[in-house]
Length: 494
Picture 1 (tube, rainbow, N blue to C red):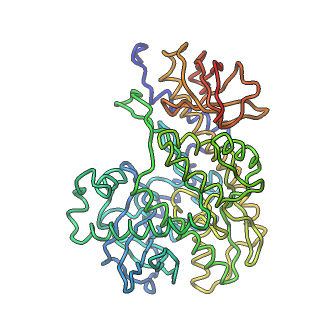
Picture 2: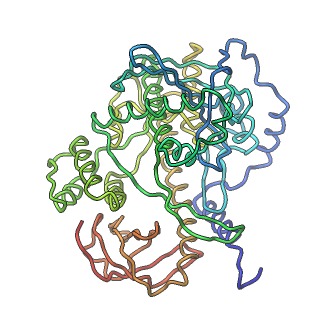
Picture 3: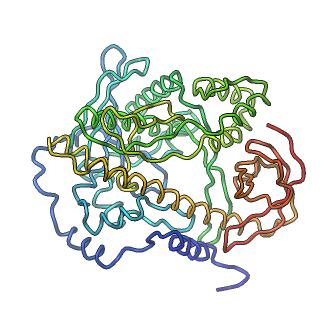
């Protein structure tokens, strides 16, 4: 390898693999998994004669430009009185990945795909997640359908869950669809080639806005954080760009939130246990109150999602440029989500950020193990069979999924930081404006405002807290360990 022109992708792949192993994750599929996969390719899905045929509907996928594991398709239809019917098709993974099979054991161990900057470590082999079960363009696929009807206020009036065959009529990408919806770009070619699809996408956008508006009336938080996206030129790391939300991503987000709520209530109504995604009442509410007060806004002493959302909406209007930084501070103070098993009529906490009580992850079974568990529960309920998991089994699985998700997140962050260290190693000594994103006994972290990079403050961190805006100087980087070290220069309270 040329020392003057290192292969950044290879460097990051090595770091990613080591990070997976250090956290007890499996970066490779075993021989037993591969052997089972070969047998699976030769087998048929079985008798699916009772499954409905919905292939004629103008389904389309909407995902990232480079996504190949397509878990969802969507469709919408206008109804009388201003109502809209929304259909979400979810890849039927359970038909091919049976409980306690070798494929299932690997998925259960890692519990989620790891999307690192240089390499994806899929939960299931790509032959499954990007082919056999993926809802690929122009292919008939088995799916679980969540059907819902919303009125002009975004209120859910009816919902159904059933199985069906579906066909993807257009593989669409977020950025190009968002540009078209926002009248900033031409209609994507993939959409233009399917007569009637443009009107369906506009209807989906309208329905998503209704759902979002009602959620925020009920107290869902208007958060807008910025994700980092690494840009490669061949195998060389070129830049670290900001990947922001847009109207097309919002369609999928709102539809998935609605579908996940319907799924949880469906299982509860049939007496089935479930795994819920929960975000508990924030433990550091007092710090959120302090941040609001520094922006001349008074929040109640006790956690109140509606009041917090009113503050966030006001701040976005007043300072849209810096709103993602405020959002990030609030997200950090809300705390991480987790999985919890729930029995019908149970008291598992809801999702504080979404202002919903009933919420189960169900829409990405190729990528997340809790969604595959939920799919098995749904299919058993649809077939009037006993629940495939007991409450005690789901308790153990929920705890394991939470723990492993945290490990995968740490792998992804470490690789992202290693990539950032590669980009910043020539900028040691420079000063940057930043916001404090973490402050505990383990250390104090900041994220730069000019580029979405996070690092540790190793000098002058005393007294710093989440949400504080500071000026820092880059003093060291360590690519192998993903360390980016700063010292504090000055600060101003948010």
